[in-house]
Length: 211
Ligand SMILES: *[C@@H]1O[C@H](CO)[C@@H](O)[C@H](O)[C@H]1NC(C)=O
Ligand SMILES: *[C@@H]1O[C@H](CO)[C@@H](O)[C@H](O)[C@H]1NC(C)=O
Ligand SMILES: *[C@@H]1O[C@H](CO)[C@@H](O)[C@H](O)[C@H]1NC(C)=O
Image (tube, rainbow, N blue to C red; front, side, top):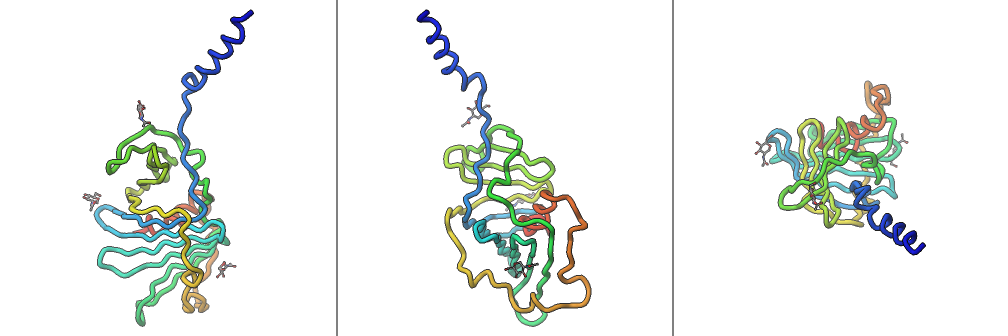
């Protein structure tokens, strides 16, 4: 009868290797600041990304190479302000409303594991969100390293400051974002449909996806 506990022990100790646990992506920290280097078929940009889930807001500050800075400010109520801060006619703002909020910290849940690969000297676990992106996360530190959108646009994570928060005053869209215009300002863009993926394309990564 001494063999019974032993065999149970054996099964328990073998279980992990039998099941072979598939790595899952680490949820995003609720707040972080990241500098991204982005390449879209040779057009380069730097993006300051401020992710702030507890305050329901997300900011992409996009510097195209030798171009002007584009601010892409997103609120969890579906309002997005895309604007420039310049002189005269270069001051533009394109507010819009979509039917979903910013990405949740666990937005990578359900991504398909593809294995590991070395990127920029970092050994990464790789997942795919079908028809959206491929995501690379450092095996050891669990930090994001790289992602490639299905459009071909690729981003490299240059800094990743967990817990960094942009001061409130910087989240204030300029006054000209609130001027009512004739036409399509503040148009509800829910007709596009597509829920989650649409949100990803239209909102959070719009700066990374649009030309
Ligand atoms: C940007 O991507 C293109 C391919 O789309 C590549 O030829 C080029 O070398 C890349 N540039 C940089 C600076 O990584
Ligand atoms: C969403 O929240 C932002 C920031 O508080 C605000 O400026 C915007 O008007 C809100 N949008 C709607 C549709 O309530
Ligand atoms: C990477 O994948 C290979 C092949 O599946 C595996 O043998 C190796 O243990 C993996 N390395 C890490 C660091 O996960």
